[in-house]
Length: 220
Image (tube, rainbow, N blue to C red; front, side, top):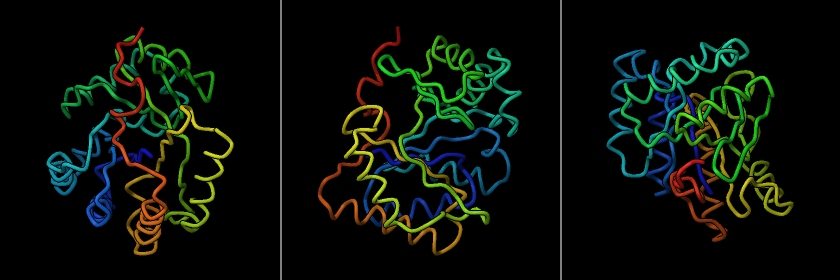
């Protein structure tokens, strides 16, 4: 089980760290460069993340496509430049990346593009040496930007993915949610219960994304 959290540092980052330490589980934070420079608090949260042994940092672009995804992926060279800017400004030199607004994979053994219009940009990220990782299961928000639904529903989805062998790599599930969905007590509690019950089942080991199978092989 790979717990991954996008768009940090953001509202909810400190709550995320509290949950991880309460349960003593590791996770990967996919950072957005411009969020680091959005406020002094976000800069402080980056330092908290950087110092934390339970957290691994990865690249989620500098601009988050300015939230205009269709336009962003029309210019593959600009996409690579955006990730390079985040890499250099945040010192994310291992080149593990996740594309904003898209569930794209570009590893040696996995090539997945959710929307064909993003293919050229994804291919150029791979050519530039990025190891692009998407996800197998996302806990999405409701209309108030809190976690939607209860932890029991997410646990059933985890079981279904494993039962039906729907993971990109068998027996390895990449889970995604976002720091900014963890600002209310209900969301924090539901994520905490989700992790607690995964732990208590004794069926899962938690890993950082750099430990995902074959992710560190040299890209062809």
